[in-house]
Length: 86
Image (cartoon, rainbow, N blue to C red; front, side, top):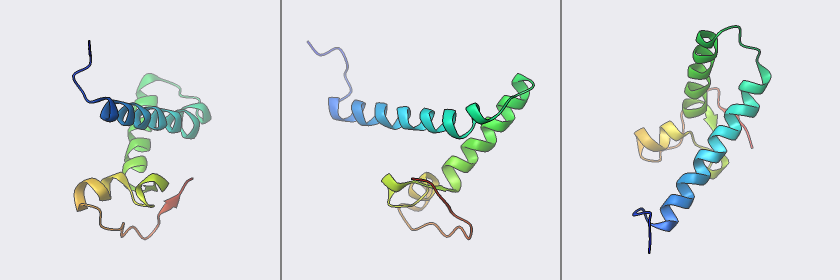
């Protein structure tokens, strides 16, 4: 009996993408900062997610940003200052 109505292939890919995102958040932002308040943490995380989605090039996306894939249907990023992270 299948308890999850989402196809197995989709749920594994979705899960792995989320794991990678949160690993990146922890190692590239949270563990490097000493937040003075929850408000400061929230502000810094908002900035990090903007960076992660709009400036950080992803190897798995053929060195494009998630935003360029989502909004421009896969056109190469035109960012003048891309950030390469492997």
